[in-house]
Length: 113
Image (cartoon, rainbow, N blue to C red; front, side, top):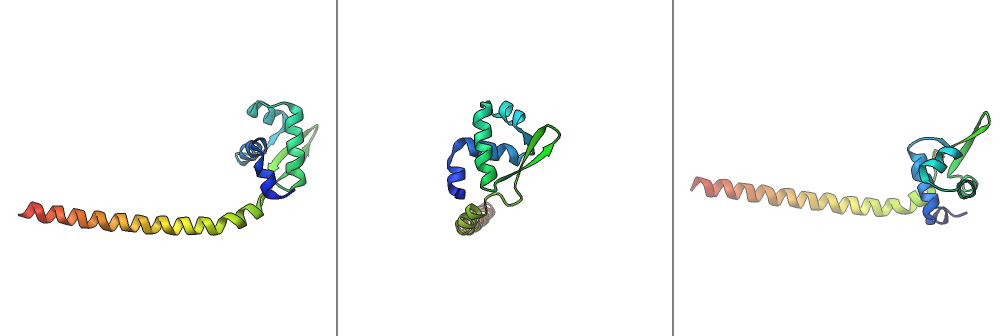
């Protein structure tokens, strides 16, 4: 499944967000997300098949972890936009700072008069 289709579903995004905070077994995910076992298992299967999560067998439990590189296609797509927005915000911050400096210097000059 395409990475964008993986994150298109809100339930899968909630599972990914939960696993970002740490590993969890199915029971823990059911409790934290207040979802049925069948729904959680269904979405974990999709996430596992897509390579977004990995599973570790620990006794009778299956513990799910977020993959080391869970959504490379999404990251590759969003990175150029992030850079553009970050650069634009940096320029805005510089403009605000320089305007603030000019404004502060003007106040100092006015106070001397």
